Length: 217
Image (cartoon, rainbow, N blue to C red; front, side, top):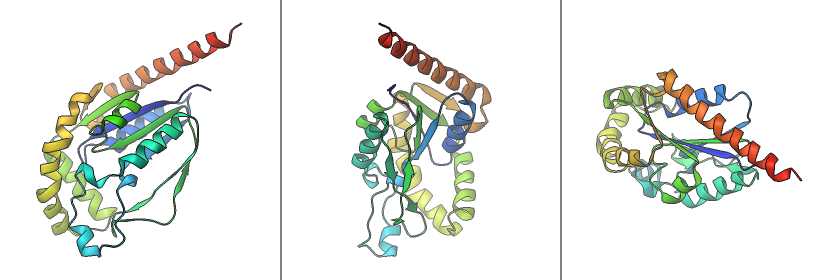
């Protein structure tokens, strides 16, 4: 069977990665699409108290289970289903239940530190970095964490200043150099998203044509 195309979308927290991923999927009407969020692969620390978990640096590469992420990406690339973890951002723990992700023609994964690990970069066929100004990213992060994750404003700001901003400068921003495409203005850049989708469609067509050629006697 034709190997799925893996699209990696990286960028700072609040840059609009999820919006880009959704818009790309919406435009890929002729292919099936599977989503993976890198946030699901935070390491689990059930033996630590909640206050201790809150003090961990969740914006450092060491906070992610890259081994499991690579294992799942390899499985999807072989057209095998996976059980993706689910993460609770209030308790900072993995939930008991997982989400079954079925194989698809295109696998889209987004995450702030996606391109930091060389194994993940090797597995991504197309690498997109979503760029956005720091003030825009902070505003979006505040809106998301207060409305969707139930966090108080003072906790959000303290985390941003102590870990989010420094880790962005140390790890996220430098990883931009690995991208095939740098997309400014996030999910609102319709022209750039259409160009990315056109590139993906061409890659899919070339793969299908090559597979058909191999099957021709």
